Amino acid sequence: MFVSLFTLSLATSLYAQSGAALDIDVKDQDSIKSVAKTLAGSIVDLYKGDLKEDLIPGLFSSPYYWWEAGAVFGSLVDYSYLTGDSQYDDLLGEGFEHQIGEFDAFMPTNQTKSLGNDDQSTWGLAAMSAAETGFTTKKIGNLSWDVLANNVFESQVARWNEETCDGGLNWQIYQFNNGYTYRNAISTGNFFLLAARLAKFTGNTTYAEWAEKAFDWTEKIGLVSEGYIYDGTDETQNCSEINRIQWSSNNGIYTEAAAHMWNVTTDNKWKNALSGFANSTFRSFVQENILREVACELNGKCNVDQRAYKGIASRSFARAIASAPFLSDLLTPLLEASAKAAAEGCSTKDGTVKCPLKWTTKDDGEYGLGQSFSALAVVQALLVPNAKPLATKSSSNGTSNGSPAADTPAASGSGKPAENEGAADTLVVSRSLVVVIAVLAAALL
Image 1 (cartoon, helix red, strand yellow):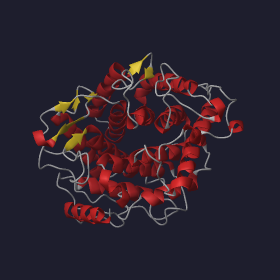
Image 2 (spheres, helix red, strand yellow):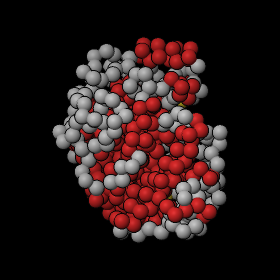
Image 3 (tube, rainbow, N blue to C red):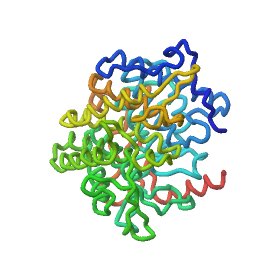
Image 4 (cartoon, one colour):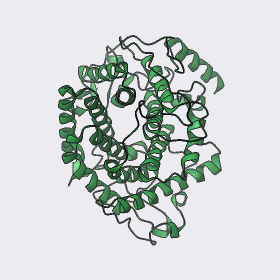
């Protein structure tokens, strides 16, 4: 089922007057929260419409893939934390519960045919947001958010592939999926970010070691070069050729991860990396101080996934500023200008909230979940500086309902995949278990 535009609508009385843009004062917290509420409401309305029709919590209908639902759920967790509006919390909890999968690591069987490492880690990062923001729900049972995030981390440590290319993560989890041999920047980047956030949350150095290992590999192989982040490479060529397309989401993710690592270590290595990422962001993705998706906006060829990338970037830039405040002078004006352009490009014409892909030219006739998600992400990014501090393990147990969190990761940081040496309440997925899961999942499809 393809999503019709009317499902993005809410009653006009809940929004601005029909046909009006979403006016925003980027210096006023109440104005920002009001626009965020409008955008969050439109996304939840779409979700409820899909849920009513398909009856699968945690998913949006075609053409939206599973990973994007994870990104949206993470953003709505942020919305609850940043605005204090908790009306959607149990709805989100229900969705998380249905997508955790049989191994408590966001590997649901019904996603096997297209399950990528980047997809899984997007949901793991959403769980990490729930841990950091103290998100609570009655829907997760006795699991804790940081345990779920750690389970994703452990399963991906087990897949770190040094058989070719000296490391990295394959794009796809299962070898029978198209694209398995591709090593893309987003899969290793999400792992880099998840490890860095776990390091900051727990204080455990094993996570930091893996974060650094992941980053060093991207530089060694050429996916990261002088601050530029390229799309990917292929193990069939031993990663000797680089696909040099650039995406704003990669710049955001790597910037955020490096900022967390600087916060944890204060090592100039990360400050230098941040300088490179910031420079490449402005050279590649900024026009009139407003974000644009340069690889596809200019030619009108952004696919469904790519329409959400600026939202991912915006969210990560705001979090990067929180961990590395010296980035504020550079990135805050970018977020403010982008949020103003994105919000004022959205409208409530005929009771339907529509947000454009292009923030520089406003109305471009292309609307959908990715565009609304991106608008919400960049708008609520302006609330991050005034939000209460994120939780750490010493200040919060990171749980959904008070259950104890996991203590340590099982991975040794030695470069070898963890096998079956996990700490209590953690899940370690070995290579052999990954194969078993794949076989069983394929048999069920």
